[in-house]
Length: 127
Image: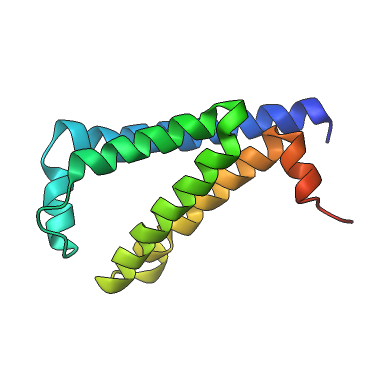
């Protein structure tokens, strides 16, 4: 695959990831009470929903900026790790809930790996 196509596909994956985060995760935190109810159901009553939403926005913006993409991806994985632990603690279903952070992480890192030649040099795929 050519370098140009790798970069385009990487930005496509990164964009899909960002659209999902902004649409399905950040927006409900800012515009509805669904997130607060969900956090209560998961055992976190009184969770700082707005702060969590701001952290998600900051991490995603950092991820989308070429100069800070690696930092954004790293911070996002820390956040997703906490989400996974919450799902484990709540004894949520494995493939649909608990591993969802892993699925998002694959999109996140796959997009970054494809769009950033420097990341590919650090983590090459050997044939």
